[in-house]
Length: 225
Image (tube, rainbow, N blue to C red; front, side):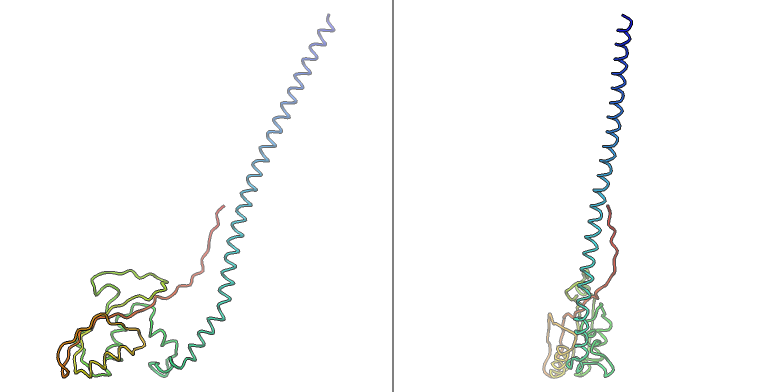
């Protein structure tokens, strides 16, 4: 009976040893699988992040190529302005460039003082008309309102003005025509005429315009995982 009892005990020990070995293998395999899953998740995130970086670089490269492609066209247009005879004929002084004519015609900022001075000394004084009053305001100020001017806008911004002129019919008529022929765009909204051909009094309200300057910026973009 003793040998059989020893044999049964040995079998139970072998079964426990096998179970312990199997458990260790299962634990080890679970750890390996967990590390593989974590590694795969990390690699997937890294691949998606690299894809975003490559996409952003590709977009930036296309923008740079497009800008470089327009350089020659821009140079050609600038040179054509320098050679434009129509612009040369309306220069304020012989020393001025054709580019200055363009800036004078459509300034890049709200310049009520410069516009008022130009009306008084360069345009209205030719006809000999009397200037009873002249008011130039920023957008909306003459109407008691404020208007926001959007930078980099494609549309010209409005700068209103009002004036009262006195003189003969010939003088007033010549003054209004001089304003219409000005290189700076002027539109009349209202025009009130009083008096006779000998002595007239004209009250006018109108708008001139300016185009806010374009801003060129080099920006940096942060790509987050």
